[in-house]
Length: 256
Image (tube, rainbow, N blue to C red):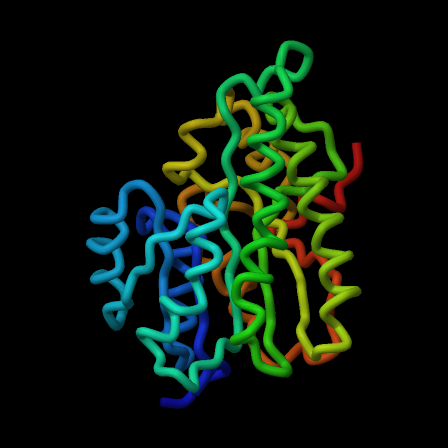
């Protein structure tokens, strides 16, 4: 199969519904020639059902990024699907979570904040290290962020967690560059996904895009962000690392 990811093997996390950016990234990746493996946590049967809606059914591995046993066994699980000589050419990190308390900045306690940071930021490093034995020279790690330069309404400690993710990306790029591995983020605008439903005041946050995206933004369309992810997974950015590529309709550049 031809395409910009022809022959590549990509691990995609965070697929839960067809409205997720991760699903669109997996779909576009397959259409561009990649073999895709998914991970899921919690609602594994749901992820397995959604996996069948991809252009080609994809295997699903159970992964809780806060469970060290799961991380330790991940490379072995991937080998079960790809063979002992398995390699990975890319990882999509689309994992974020904040307890309800994390969306109240002044009242949040450390348990809520630490959970948000561990799942949303530290997991970017821990997932990558779990897969490191399989990563080929030239591999690409791509994560999803939500522009952490801004104190967004209602986002609170999740905004701090995303700032931690963006910093983690730079340090990971620094340390994995000598191994020929690129690390970049896509900063996407808000999408009406299942994850968005857990953010109190999401509509207020999303309303910013209705007024300020110069090229327009569709809250129901995750495909542009998914395409951005696939672009960074490809070999078209061979010397781009530690970067954040905005796929947000241009809101990030509009200023106060």
